[in-house]
Image 1: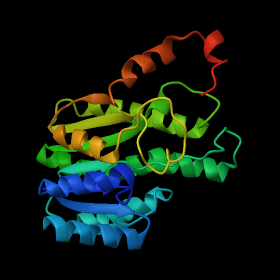
Image 2: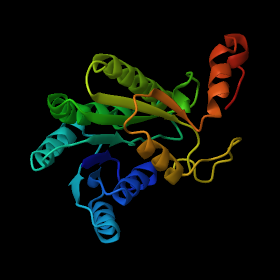
Image 3: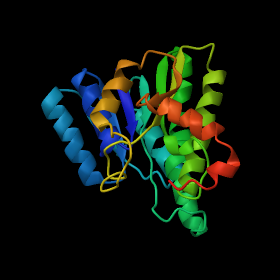
Length: 244
């Protein structure tokens, strides 16, 4: 079995690669830094004895990513799992940044996932099996004055996965999107956060244990569920005064 991991050299992506390799699955790792990719692939081969291949591609260039992924997949017998823990945010993302930077956020958080899915999905449909997993954020719960484009692109990702779940409901292809809370990654490093932080390894174990299930949208950690509900139902007159 083979899994493709988009954004494979850091955080949740790296943890997923290691967890899948530990379970004996071959992996195709995709990231933009060739040195980090080669080091991670070598680590997986050495530690777990799996086949670990690489594709150097940048999520901000979705068409190029799709072309490189298509070429790499042509040399594989099958793709059983596509995992897309790719994402990027900016501290100054208040909706007023230059269009080029806005487009970069959209491409990394949304378009790159769609591009990878477009490449992988037809083969999964032909054999009537496979799992596609996306990663959203609690930031997509409700729009606010910070992380404007990031939140919007993650909400678009959730809508995309909901649509794909509906489209593929009568097939053997499963789609799941994880709405992640605070995770111990570079994006959260040094920030003062009000709630507990999960580790990338926690996320990876949960995702890998549920690859065969049709779960739709999963909030992780689950203690975020009531918080998300409250954020959605709080009246605008109150919500607009909240700073977070």
